[in-house]
Length: 218
Image (cartoon, rainbow, N blue to C red):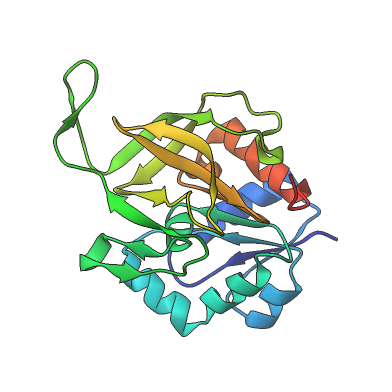
C-alpha cells in the first residue's frame, strides 16, 4: 500500500490536503504526523505550511523535520507546498531574516508594494487568487495538466532559487505578479510549488494524483 505522510509541524490546514489526497486515491495509507519513524517509513512525503517563517522554522527545528527532510531527499518523493516550498531554501527575508532548511540555495523575498498590472491596477500583497503557471520544463508531475493552467495562490513571499550553484533547484514553473517568479521547482526527489493544489480544483487534484504515482525520477 502507498504510505503517504503529511508532515505536521503545527502550521497549516493539513486536513484539507489529506482530504484531497484521499479523494484522488481512497486506497492510500494516509498519516498526518510529525513522528520521525513514521516519516522515515513513508513511501512519500508532503511538506505543507502557512504562516510566518520564523514560527515555522522554530517548529521545524524543534521537531527535527529539517534533518528528516535532508535524509529523505534522495530516498523518496517529496512534495513541498506554499511555505513548505519556501522553507526548503537557504534564507527568508521574512521576520527580519530567517535561516531556512537549506535543501536548495536561494532566498525567499517579499513582493514589493504598489506594483501595478498591465491595466494600471495596483496589485495587492498578499498575492491571493487564481494565476497561471507556465511550465518551463518538462516533468512527470505535469502529466495531464495543460501548460498555463490556473492554480490557487495565497502568499506575500516568493522563492528566488540560486540556479548557478551546485545542488540548486530547477525552475519548472513560473508565474507573474507582475514580476516573474518561480511557482514550481524540482530537484532529485523533490517537487515543490508555491500554489495550493488542494485548493486548485481539477488541476490541483491531477497534480496530487501525479505525485501519488511519481517515482521521484525524471
